[in-house]
Image (cartoon, rainbow, N blue to C red; front, side):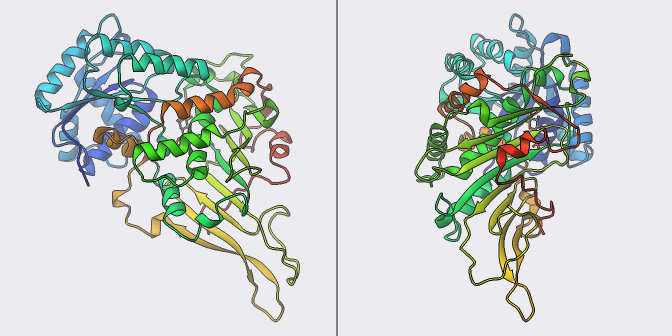
Length: 478
Ligand code: BG6
């Protein structure tokens, strides 16, 4: 595997939740996999009020890796990683400590070292940090990873693009959506375009409906400040779920390079029909308004489910149903494609688990490590021709060696160091998604209460998808 050039990585938001849960553990995993550069330095940064000493940042990173990482932060591997960490606080009006820390890091990483900034900060802080990177010349010949959500609507996404483009060229910008770095999401490209088995049926002639379902069991986890202004639609739907829809629905790209892949995804987003408020269910779990940091009359949705249409030749008339929410009954990441069935005239009626469950379907579980199943009917053993449900399953965990498997963030940070933008989102695609969302965002229906641990607000959540229903397979794929 190609290793990136030497790098100084500057992590804004280094004391925040994302850095603790994903980024610091992910960087250590990359180090353990031998995929960080020969010479690298990681400079943590945050506003002065959250400043840490180098020693405290190292301890912070060790705690993060111990709690959320795959490997223990100990031994020579940890020591080498820890020595590469330092901290430099920065406020737009006082960037000096950061500049000093970057200079020191560059001295150790060598004159060829490239700079990569990761903006793991709340969206309102993007403009001031980006402007500071421009004013201090740090941005020169560097790359920047920008976290989601990218804007809160079409106007703000355009304004943010203008702010970024005033400092960085498009080739330097890496808008990250970590679902696009998941192995089993990438594998959808292989499933569809490397196999004569699936692609011929991947269209409106053979597929009746598509579900992309990402229920979560976790609640706010102390993120009220971010979540109150964001909500499930902006946190999950316009970002992760619609990006996954882009992969499921895209036309075959000419090559797998960044431009071809992102062109095809942008065409899917351009073909999305405007999202009408009546096609969206918003939910709020009971007890949300009592959470610390949440307004007692909060209208923020903790669940969003919607019916989308991709209005192009491949998909016209095929409904796409998306759902994601907090505090639901299960944590799952499942795509289900219902297949049209032949009229089984010569066969006896058979029983399926649910009267409207399609007997023929393709199920893609993209939770790590993920599996794919094809459901069909088979003859039940016996003297009569009775049919029963059957399944063919591919499971990642018993099919390939997992040693090289990287988690979403790890894969994408590696790609950003390598300068490969294929799995990063592009401004035109994002703007199409916001444009499509405008009717809903201008007139959102009120959130409906749902019980924690349920599947969302009844009966609205089920009426949205009728005559189909939310299909959640056994989570082992068997
Ligand atoms: C994040 C959202 O982007 O993705 C979180 O902000 C969500 O609210 C998370 O829980 C889900 O991703 P994963 O990979 O942790 O399941």
